[in-house]
Image 1 (cartoon, one colour):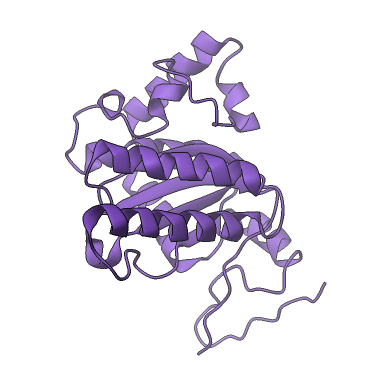
Image 2: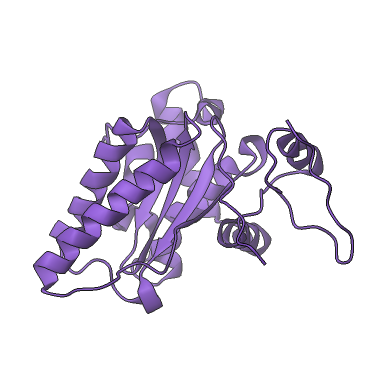
Amino acid sequence: MARLPRLTLPGYPHHVIQRGNNRQAIFISKTDYQTLLDLLVENADKFDVAIHAYVLMRNHFHLLVTPRTADGLPQMMQAVGRRYVRYFNSTQKRSGTLWEGRYKSTLIQGERYLLACMAYIDLNPVRAGLVTQACDYPWSSFGHYTGQRTDKFITPHALLWELGNTPFAREAAYADLVQSGVSAAQQKALTDSALSGWALGEPDFVADLQKRTQRRVAKSAAGRPVSVRKT
């Protein structure tokens, strides 16, 4: 069966996962983390992709982004991936692949899943046992959204404004949101959708997406073919 192209549409938030090959480390030093972050910032600007949230883990990273053009996200990820591999291989005196194949991604329904996806991303270090609280991890967007620092490259999604009328109120509300955690069902849905490439959202949202692309956006029911409307 032919591999489906990635589901990428401009104007929608996308959850992106990139893993190291065989779960190997992709970051060894603090300089490695900063180098990848710098590459993300540079190429997000170059290819017109808004970064809403991120976390850099030892053997993978997550992004929540909105591409403003049809090709912006794949172009950004290709540029970042190639340049980081060259940098990493050079500094570590190694050769060969670094990534576990293509990056994984899908788009999500903002009103339903955006805030949950942000919390899910910022809680990665806690779930991995690296820190006890999200605020203790330096390589995520949590510090930006709770007022610990300012990451100028981050573009808050419009839904963030609903958390409060002032910056302080929004920071406190987001901290509470992350502290409350993400349900097991939400966590599974966010992980599975990104890894499978199927859109994540309510049925009406998914049906509307299907009108906008010839690529299937949801897994078909067993034994039932899916007709794709041409646009």
